[in-house]
Length: 142
Image 1 (tube, rainbow, N blue to C red):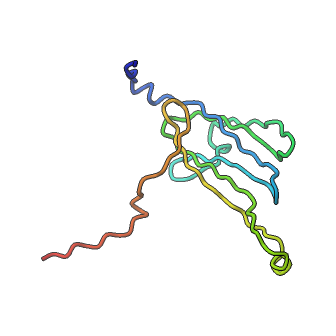
Image 2 (image 1 turned 90 degrees about the horizontal axis):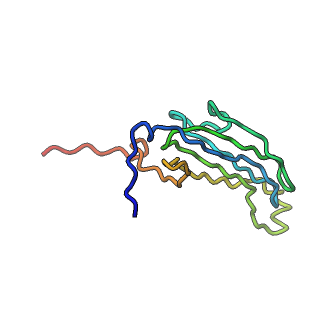
Image 3 (image 1 turned 180 degrees about the horizontal axis):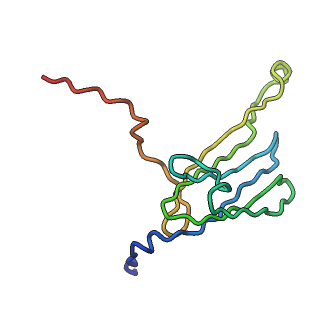
């Protein structure tokens, strides 16, 4: 087994190339959309709108509304969010359908990722955030 390679601070801070793909596909009951976001300071910004992003259209084949490739150059540790939105299929009886009309809800799933040092995206679960914690009760003095 090889010993891990020593990395200098300069190598650890080198920007890495990341390729993402936003797209919209035709699926039963509507369209499925996938959009990537990048964390910039305290906000999630659409990857295609990040400064320095190179966006290219990809040929859309059958069942594809649009596809675009997004190339970014970011430092390791950069955070990403993929948002997948699809029609929500609700099983109803014909009578319920006639009474309430067609369902128009969407199912939205958000997945978080972090850019590792090798340039790959890995699933990321954020730790507890102080702003999300319940306030502590003050200690009672004896």
